[in-house]
Length: 378
Image 1 (spheres, rainbow, N blue to C red):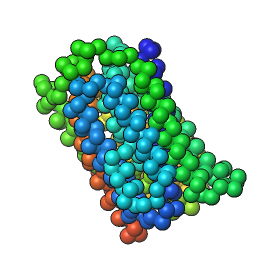
Image 2: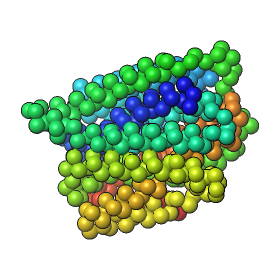
Image 3: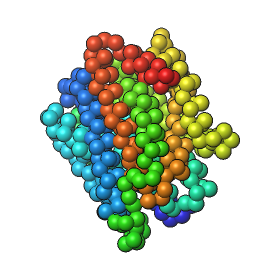
């Protein structure tokens, strides 16, 4: 690995560790503040919507300001998001920070950082190594998110020292802010881009516009379905349906993340044999059937088993999708292409949590997951 890829992996690990525990703790924290499922779904929707809008902006301005500088700026936003979430209990401020900040309810690769990192990583490795590099990049992120989910049990441990639940939860958002600062320092150590690479070296979409639009439409359908089952809402369902404790949920999401992580190198291996597109397609149907089965499971052990099997399959399209997008566009279009394929995914996914939250509040708690599975299969 090059120095650049190693530093990107460290930055991704720090960020996804924070996203891992925030996705689990977000519904717990908002419930502790007195918010119901509908409000929690709205917060998740605004977070995904804000991520989409900022990602779109990144695709437009990355050529003007450079990827390194924008990654550092995004880290400042991450730190500010954590500090403000820890300091307020006002719903209006929480909704505003969810919209303009980096709070991630899905613990996945949906953020302002992703298109910038994709472009930097693609530039740093040979074409023959691209898919394996994206698999490694996704593996590190998923493992870090899994460890973050395990760390979501920390408030229970802190409560044993005498801290109140709300103070312990706020301490985790302060940790999230600290991780943003640490990630910014890692990005600062990246090599500066040559003057020729900033300004004229990157462009908005040109000759690859047609294929990018078609890919964006395809990803949009998939992500709209995924929005019904973001991790924060899945955690809320487990808390309410099976009365899981915070420690038990954290342990489940840890193993879920581990299985997702190790599916990435398998996806890279599979792609060399059946192709990138086939790898994306043929892992979706069984994972969706597992999600539908979990929604009907009468016992917690059955539900968790099906959800773990889903975790081992559902993310195998992530490194292959990223590699495919980078392969079919020209080098100057890569940041823009990563942004313009990510934005429709985020916008489509943003509608799901609010709808799912309203369905939760109406008492149909398993319905969002059935909808997610059926739409992904369709």
